[in-house]
Length: 199
Ligand SMILES: O=C(O)CCC(=O)C(=O)O
Ligand SMILES: [Fe+2]
Image (cartoon, rainbow, N blue to C red; front, side, top):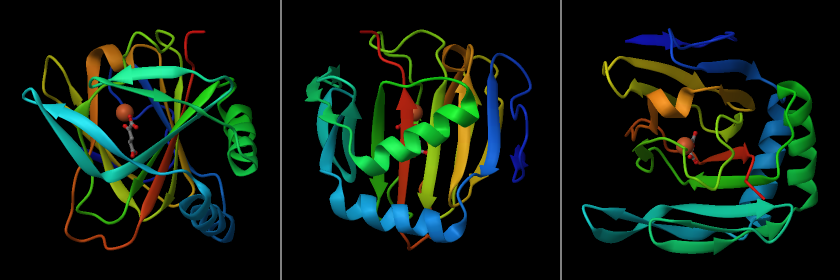
């Protein structure tokens, strides 16, 4: 398994591009956004279906976007909330760095290391195919992993506080990704994924 911890143009060997920018916010700024977002976002528990059974996650989520998108996954329909100032600032920064514009953002709050996200890809029909997904991380440093659908090859990266990662081109078709759980992390992490919805 390859493990990266510095800025790299593409951490994947083939079948898509994942660019790690490293920290794009300094620690005081990242810590401040983390605190603001934990307090002001309208966090909800997520629902996921595993082997046909509905589960409520401990991890919390929120959706923000340009218009009142409704978005269905795992049998639940959610409505996007209108942008707030902090999210608009972060969206502008991420748009500048990735050279793409985004019309929505999914936020995840992991209270500690024992909350994570299982293997999946972000390839719902409601997303523009092959559009860049930009992932900004605030708070606790966590490992993020990719696994190739056909070869099983894995690649991991540590996502530091204030860091940006962009998933581009055909990544979602060939690779799954996950945020593995760990007993070693006791601090919260907020992740923002800026996305392009089909409108
Ligand atoms: O928390 C993360 O870094 C990943 C989140 C993710 O994969 C998703 O929201 O689809
Ligand atoms: Fe994802």
